[in-house]
Image (cartoon, rainbow, N blue to C red; front, top):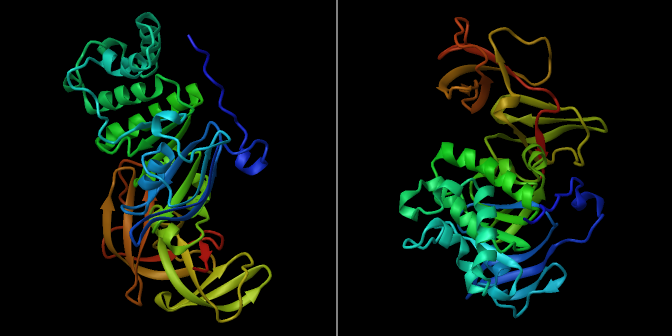
Length: 379
């Protein structure tokens, strides 16, 4: 049995302690006049579980297919483990790819599906069966080895496809929307299984997904894509709490976005005049800006507090009326209408099973947030 490769606990993208395992340099892919991928440069490190996140048509799957060798870059260079991939066919690359459809052979058992690639490589049956047994144990499918795909649940078929992709121990596994066919609860459970498998093997994973929650759960880092370009790369908390643009702030999770102009600019704070609020936003740190500059302020719903009594503070306090409430079980989402007519969202954790004093529809409330709760955006 092979010994699992330990996953590094350091962050080489910060420390620079090791060279990138994958280096994508100025890669462009054109289909006629259409730029599917536009001048993308990206470094990914060994042992990462990296997510390419974006909406339909943003270029993430095309970039994945170029890594796999199914598409050829129009311009640029791709290196994997120090080797230039130019001209190398998919079977010549140290990669494997798991497709969204899973592409299992319906007439083969689970065991034979997983063993297929090993037999194609000429491996002897005894050795192949040992590797298959090890992989089925890892994905917890040993009792299902003799079943056919149609006798399995969606989550089990997903794990068969994963086992088949990993049994040859590729240096890099590419996963295209791997959990997209699963229902929400099963998808959430499978995400953690995927993380455990990746950590135990130490294989570098690149996952393509359009699901923000999935990317936040899985990834060591996320590359957000839009219109063929990577617009921000970072760890999940960085992407969520410190978006670099309105697009990223709006795409990742829920957000309240306000447009304003700088009315005060001091080294340790700025103030934004915001027409939608009928007042100003106080930002408790300095920002690189000038007076009267147009900026945007993004604040997440969970950062907003609502109460019937006025908070004991003077900054970032506004009146509102509860317009709608959505009960989600663990949280309630409050849709609040300001005197200007602007709507904003605030979430509240449901910490008790019943609350006679809970804020409800039509209540007049005070809305507030801390002076460091939001992100100031220049684009």
